[in-house]
Image 1 (spheres, one colour):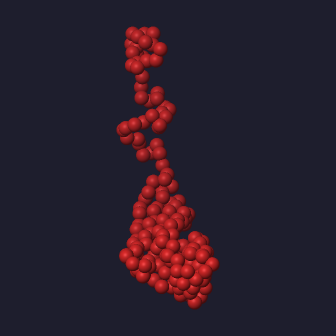
Image 2 (spheres, helix red, strand yellow):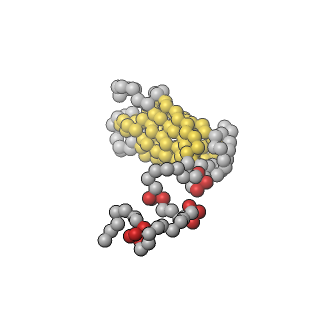
Image 3 (tube, helix red, strand yellow):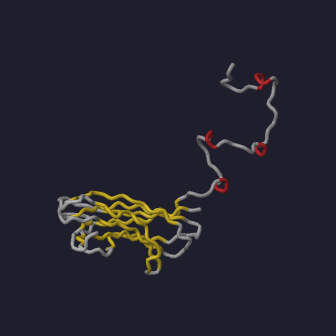
Length: 187
């Protein structure tokens, strides 16, 4: 028979033994539905800070050299912190047969320190059709091991040097924007 209420008489006695909270050393956290846990009992994975940028500037890029389109700068509070960068860029290509090459750069002190390859063939159609891709969503999980200011820079270029690729294309009508968010993940 299942108990719906615990009573001392159901356990073979007339009174519960006295218990101290100190004797309760193991508690399954999945059973906790309310209350407060001491912060010292859990650690890691907390968001330390969030930095966000929105860009609505239209760019027509006709070079195979990378051009910065949007960036965010974050200064980690500890060398053990990780940084998660989320980027959503509105990109497309014009009629020449080309692709959009996308990269995320980590910049410290004005120097490119690391590069994350995002795509080498965005908008590839093997023809000269106009191709508004829409949004290219990407992320970069970084372990910078530094408390220096870090700029994460999203850059694109055209695969073919004479063919245009676009960022925040207003020519298609309407108003487009791209956004980037950097989050410090505490250790």
